[in-house]
Image (cartoon, rainbow, N blue to C red; front, side, top):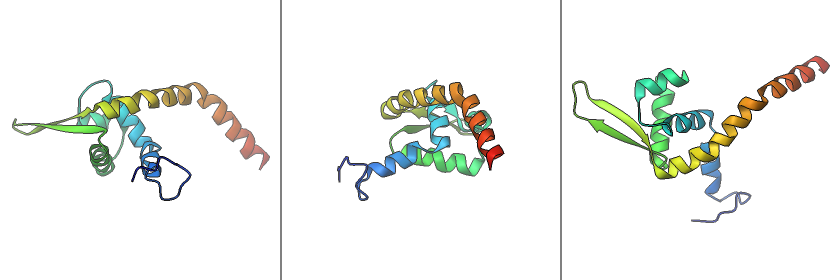
Length: 118
C-alpha cells in the first residue's frame, strides 16, 4: 500500500512518522550520519539503555535507515552504518536538531511561565 496521505488512518506513512518522531531515532541517525559507529560508542554518545538501543537499531535496520556490518574479529566487531535512505532522512532531521538547540531557551521559558501561572 502506498497511499501517501498522512491524514488517512490506514496510511502506512503514519508508521514512518512515528519512527522519525522518536528521539532515539533522531539522535542515532544524526550520529550515524557522521560515520560508522560501534554499539558501545552509540550507547556512550546517547546515554540510551542497552535494550532500547538494540531495539531502536533493529527498527532502523528494518526500515532501511541503517545497516549492520559484522567483522570476524575476537570478539566480533559490529558497526552500524547509515544507508542512503537514512542519510537523506538525517539531513532533514539535522534542521530539527539545530532548531531544537537554538530554541530550547524559549521553550524552557514558556514552560516556566505556564507552570507559574497554573
